[in-house]
Image 1 (cartoon, rainbow, N blue to C red):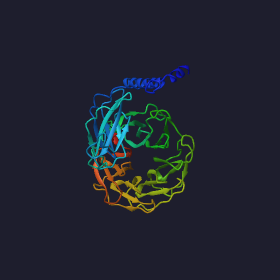
Image 2: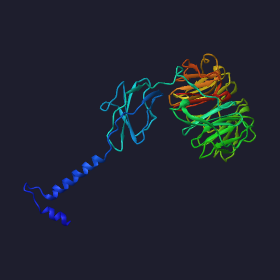
Image 3: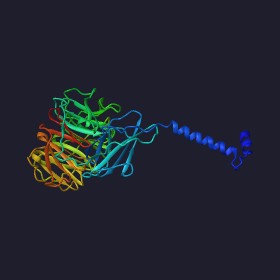
Image 4: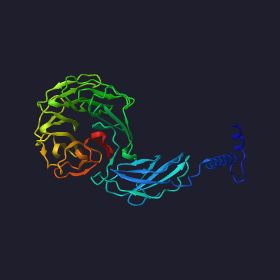
Amino acid sequence: MIGDRVLSDVQLSNGVSVKLLFRVIVLFSLIVLTACSQENPPADAPANVSAAAGENLVALTWDNVPGRTYWIYYKQGASVDLDSHDGILYNHPSPYLVQALSNGLEYAFAVTSSQSGSKVGPFSPVVTATPRQLSPTVAWTVGTSLTANNLLSVAYGAGIYVTVGDAASVFVANYSYTSPGGVTAWNPATSLPVTGSTNLSAVIYDGARFMALGTDGTVIKSSSTDVLTWVAASGITGATKMNDMAAGAGRYVAVGNAGEIYTNLGDAASAAWTLQSSGTGYDLYGISYLNGRFVAVGAFGTLLTSTDGVKWVSPASGIGDSLRKVAYGASTYVAVGDAGAITSSSDAITWTAQSVLPGGQSLHGISFGPDNQFIAVGTAGTLAYSATGADNSWLTANAGSVDLNSIAPNLVFIATGAAGANVSGK
């Protein structure tokens, strides 16, 4: 440029060109202007910071201030600061779950904030918490009854819990660890393709949507856009009484009374169900897809397994009482049932009956969750815990006194039961 040529020809007495000096002055001015335009750090620390322990996690809460970006510093032990920490979590508003922590170890947390790209302001006081494994000593929250009808099944998927039961009862809740009861609120379905004469015995999440099964063979599914809206799916015709349903291996399997097993090898929304030979005439109460196989349980200790839902084998369960549900975890299958019956297996072929659950309460549902333990639920609010599923490893507690029929695992465990009962543990 002409101006550059002129400046390049003018030299100061000390040998520095006017052009270079001009560029230095411009650069310095830009730096000063940028510094002046940057926001000052917040003058106050985040307020009301608290830490609540959960399973392998800590829930942090504080008062959000609009326009601020929050930084979480954490460290194993009782203290943490700017120069001594295990990690920094950036740009997370309250509430926030710090996960993948070790149970039984204390962690320290401090929160600071910045605004419009400023440096961080003061740190909050340090708060500490010790993640812990859910146990009988942890208080369970007993929620307000959702309905006068019995709730028979509960499932979790995509951040949502759904529970179903008698008289076409369908209730939906969004998961929220920091909310009372672990959910924001329970709401009844607003649109159903069935009437109150339909009793819904099971609900599952198949990875894309929720599916519910009626005792009369009716099948309904949640809308792809709204879980409060349900539409009809392909039903099971000629069923005696259907009790449970599972999805896996690209298919659906439903079980019911008189040993009936139906499979749907396509899309359960439209494909037909086919009656399979189960090899038993006993009622089947529960089915799950676990570790690459379907496992069904029923009356008089009946136990069936299948890899495809079509061909079934019947290993001996070692149990004479009815079995109601089965779960898998810690390399172990565990089936539970009436009068405190429990049987377990490492391969789903050879099963060993365990000692009857202390108290002899019947167990209706069981799950293995991200807390790495089995939790079973049953009559009179019974809860049974085991980290391994092994004999004599079970501890018991109670969540209220109403019968619980089903439990869904997540960071919050939700169980539902008789007369609209719902309890949560976290």
